[in-house]
Image (cartoon, rainbow, N blue to C red; front, top):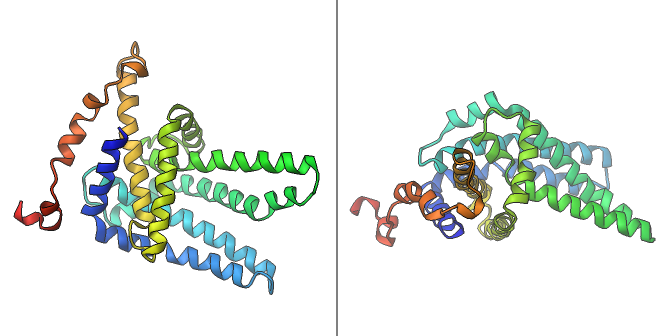
Length: 258
């Protein structure tokens, strides 16, 4: 599955590169608030905290809209402003929960973990490491939060969060791969001034991951007597391979010549 996932994400990003770049530029605003918060932190701590909270809120809300758009790209369709707008209509609760979790993560990284490590005793060291690994598990799970929100639309925000942890435990290797890919993509995003693949491209790679994992769960639900050992990814991904189709370098650069 991982090999095909790499191929699908690459072509999905390539086919929608311009829109992904434009969507990624929208993340500049919340990131700008973060830098502004840090800049005025010593001069006015209260304003700095308010700006940080606003930055996280803007990030969560905008991420919801972006995921609504990239859902279409993952499904081989063209998304747009309508998909961005409808995401708020149906999933605003998920955005607020995402905001709360991201805010908690930010404050624990900035204040909680340093506080425990600064205690200078074994208790502080143990609690600090415990909090660190809890945060790592939460960050890994949150990779699936918005993609699951759109693939399982009947679920509430907390049910989606619970399923995120279940998917991590059931697909730990895929989760680590996705995290590593996100780190690499984030480095490329920084090197290309937020353009390629951009945070929107990272969101698309996560949406594609959940789309393929859903093939497994749909199969197991339809065949309750089967186990994960009975999975045949070649069969499960047959339709996906047809949708991606054979691609060539010439067709990528000059699609009208194919």
